[in-house]
Amino acid sequence: MVFFWIKFGIDKIPDLTGKVAIVTGGNSGIGYTTCRELAAKGAHVFMACRSRERGSEAIENIKEEIKKSHPDLLQVQLELLDLDLMSMKSCKKAAEEFLAKDIPLHILINNGGIMACPFALSEDGIESQFATNYLGHFVFTQTLLPKIIESQPARIVNVSSLAHRYAPSCGIDFDELTVEGNTSAVSRYGRSKLALILYTKALTKRLEDEGIKDVYVNSLHPGIVHTDLSRNIRDTAGPIFETIYRGYTKLFGYDSTSGAVTQLYCATSPEVADKNLKGLFFVPQAYIWPPSKLAQDPELAEKLWTFSEKIMNEKLNA
Image (cartoon, rainbow, N blue to C red; front, side, top):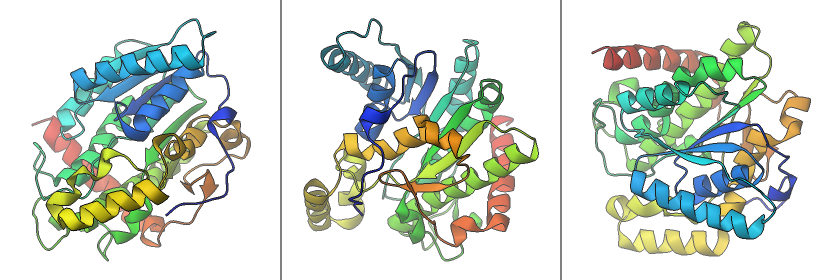
């Protein structure tokens, strides 16, 4: 879905000098653009990704782009953080490596993800899309959370999707997370994106209950964006559908710069703090939008939180 009204743009990102940010999946697509625009505004950015080779290449490319577009910027601060979202141990280790630097963390953008993949299990025995899109980010964020709270005002941004509406009718079918069952690639993707919205709401509630006022947690749909996120569609839907989908996104979807706008709004706009925007779901460009009824179910959010903590503790302490 493409939204044509524009509320926020790259040009409205404020000066971020002194801010520290982490972007998962930052070496390509809207993650790449997000890293570039944060760094161009003076933020110290950590690009968290699985491939050190691709991450290093992306950082060099971003530095060259910023040098051309912002010739007066004296220093571009971009670093690589090794992170495999398919592994809870990797997520814990990456977070601890960042914490060891003993610097603040003002912005965490959980952007990395996969879409419509054939069924597979992560190294922890969890369906791959749920493991990558949600559970890895849960472990990563929860490990970083004390530092984020210490660094407030701070933002946590969870990149979800309107495809959360394609989740199973029960929302999160917890018994199906370790087996293929009757789920389709699309419903598994929707389930993982629904989990991110539920996590956003559950974390917001906990922070508020603890009296933590200046950590703003929000989720969003970036729009239909022409990136390589759809690279697995051929394997799950066939070459004809892949051709149609790629053609549609190229003609009617956003490019990666436009697709990054809504998460950059959630991460940087003064309006988020001024209006105390928390636990919300946004769509392009930076408009609040009601997610599905399941995404607003507090009991499901609590059930997901309990499940996530339990499996995190089991796998990390094994």
